[in-house]
Image (cartoon, rainbow, N blue to C red):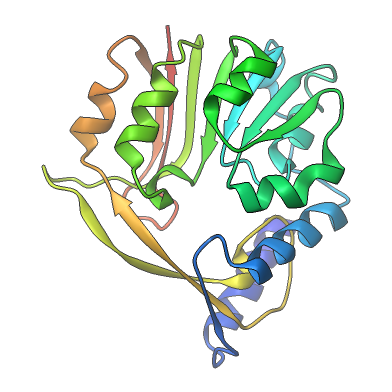
Length: 222
């Protein structure tokens, strides 16, 4: 019911005039907005049984830890390293615990976490400045499982670069009523390039559709 309500509210907000546009994921107002939404959230998503056997997870672009909160419903003692922008890492400092840490780069995260069981990323790769380099870094870690949620790819052989708009209310977990928009750069890398980066893995599942705004979800295992 919560997800349906969010969809209805956001659909309504899209029909209303914008009250301003924030540009880029490093925008201070956007960062503060997502931080407050995350910390105010009382109910996380449904349990995540796929994480029940995971002891260590690297979350690339995990914001302020909402994915970690979901994972702890299935694995209470899971250790979770989030790699984020320096601005998010600074704002998230008060949220760090013995099991949840925030880092501005992948080597620092691995230094604390060790070899992760799972490398996870949700709707982030296409919004980084160099998605191919980030993809290769993450695949090169060597975790036993790679999970990509909401990936947007190019169907052709070329990268597709442009700009995308979202509602401010669509950023971060939970419901809000802001009419502001967020504009950000998007780079869709070719599907073939994405798949080749996982040469050391086997594709275990693939769901979704690139024609949808949320793209596809991929799970690769060794």
